[in-house]
Image (cartoon, rainbow, N blue to C red; front, side, top):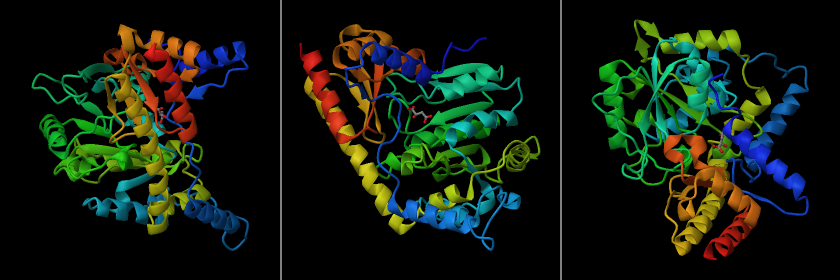
Length: 390
Ligand code: MLT
């Protein structure tokens, strides 16, 4: 009963559908939910075809995923371990749990924590952290992300939290922590026995050496952090569904291994991700796969540039687009987020995401995604420019 009436992206979809029904002739340009448009990499498709063929033959057919390996097939776990090694992080296959995407685990990890734990959530941020903890009935405190701190809140002496959500690169602002900044959060968590739930769904968009691609690039993080990763934005898996969660064996609270606890939870409530999907995912972090997904990421970066350039020309302040596929812009003329949403929908036929849906500090901001096609992104920015220039 304490939840908002509908989930942010459902509210946007409902309002958009109502507008489209009333104006069926209008071609809407959707720059709202971060859904990808580039097709799967050929290496992924080939691996899925091969796996599907194996499932159709008696000798190579498979049933349930192997439970002893946390429901992950070995070839997939091996590529994930290697991809971490390239970031300078040593993990074992036992630290990795295959999931159907970061969103589910974001909510499900809540099962590991006591109802009377206090949860710290950045604001603005991906609404799933807040909504799932409201569902769990926990006490929630917020860490403010504002223009002043570059939308990257840092720990404060008087903070009291048992569970801390961090999202870097941040959805929606695109701000990404440096390794140095993350060191402060790891220090806080170790001192206070807190656990960090680190959402790294957009890590593949990070460029440069100083920004973190994994929280485990910071010393001590294995003793205090769980990391959530996804193939959705990295490899176009929003419709395929596959991700992985790292719960290091070093992470122990009150004498209990969280790795063991998560294994216990998953084996009770989850039956794993299909073999065909896992084999497709296993092709992502291969040499061929990385080259192919790199092309898709470059394509989305191109869209981010189209959006950023247009906003710069219009003199509208924004962040993001550099380490992230999202552009976080200030609503013009002091409009609030939903007013700007309606204004843009009604006058330009462009759909974005109201910043207020990501938290109190998001009011007066608006998020545009770079995951569309070049053509739609260009057309959307042409329409926005025409509208706002007047
Ligand atoms: C977004 O638009 O914020 C994401 O697509 C939501 C998600 O990944 O669940």
